[in-house]
Amino acid sequence: MVMDQAGWHIAQELEVPHNIRLVLLSPYSPEINPAEHIWDALREDCIGNTAFASLEAADKALSKGLRSLESDHERMQSLTGFSWITSISLKAK
Figure 1 (cartoon, rainbow, N blue to C red):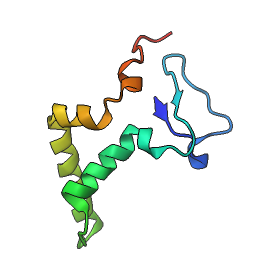
Figure 2: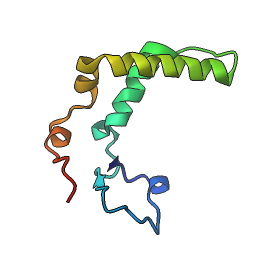
Figure 3: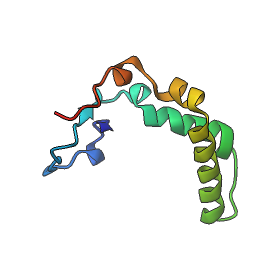
Figure 4: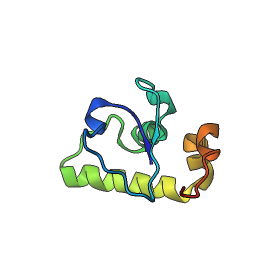
């Protein structure tokens, strides 16, 4: 699991299951966090400069945007496929 080191993301007593490995990003470096790039794409394509009538309407717009990104493998690769990510072994230690 890739995590940034924002203070509210770090638990003092976190017990990491044996089949999970944490990859901590450098502090104060949102540009290398793949999730930030997904949010940027969603803001640009789906929710930017939009006033929603309800929370449900915002949720629907975000869900539609996420489904669109999920189905566009090439775009997701370009947004999140940094060399440091693609070089991580997926085999649990």
